[in-house]
Length: 259
Image (cartoon, rainbow, N blue to C red; front, side):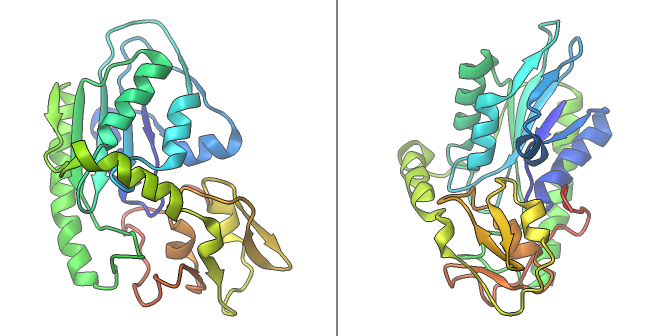
């Protein structure tokens, strides 16, 4: 059983590579949160994986809320519990946040932590306009995912998260910054918007609604996945005036979970 969150397909790709290798079932966190269906039964000895991108040296708010509310039932204690972090710069305290959430909610202990570097899609800072550069990153990413999938298949125990950075001192501060930055008032929509409603359907936080044919954000904060910016067919959505000219990105191997 793999729970995963993916805004642009990078983490979905990681989840699929591991699931295909090991015969796991995939559960998209975004869909679970949108539908409110957060109760699952694990089979005897069924592995449990959490696969998530890293946001501000932690985990996305939608993943944090899911891990706090998800309900797991099922017999058997011989479970291999692991997490995989997908990231662009450093992983910070993301694995620590997952460990804390699982411990508080279920008493589960993470037995293995893995991490794989991929294209960084935080457009206020990074650009995804260089296709050749993205392809190079994704080529190594696929190699790393195959190695991780092999370790998961063998139920390898250990910490394979080598790019934390100065997380011990800085990741709680980074999460405070995240809480401040992820205000939806910073989103804007250009006249190029055609009112297709794709952003509304795909928003994992369900904060986007079409009004008079244009998207509006209905809550003060979202998880800041920027899926709406990256997926808009007319590139009509921007965030804080800092995403223009940075390109748009979706993993070439995957389609969004919500269409």
